[in-house]
Length: 186
Image 1 (cartoon, rainbow, N blue to C red):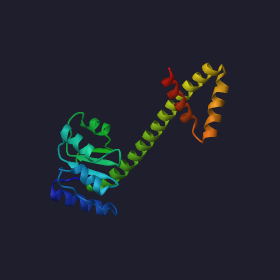
Image 2: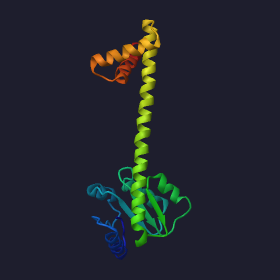
Image 3: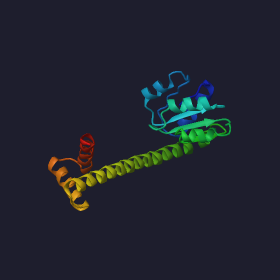
Image 4: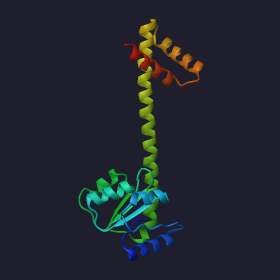
């Protein structure tokens, strides 16, 4: 948890202990925040800040590695656009009107759930992009084989697949090698 005010930090720690069995570490100084968070490798980062500026928000968000773990940020008040900026930066929960003990557990649960949903979406998107790029390379390789050997698309794909099996490689890898070699030869 990132909290500069000692009394407020103690209040939050007490609230967290009431809400569940958590191993809590309070970071009171923003200097070296990224390193400290990295060393602790927490399951979730809670940030409590009275009135964030855009620069403070960006600094805290980058330091807390929101793509690696859920980040819940509690602010007393927020300027227009900061909520959007926080969410776009990867903050899992951005709660305006401060941190209250009774809503701490639901906010943590929501932040963790939202983080996992978005991580799954990022993983699926990356896999889809990879598959699309592989498909494009395979299509280019088939085109090269069709032109060079005077064969149709089905025969070109069968040749790629047979070569991949013979070499113990993926079709996309064989296609990439063929496209690269053709590029060097032309």
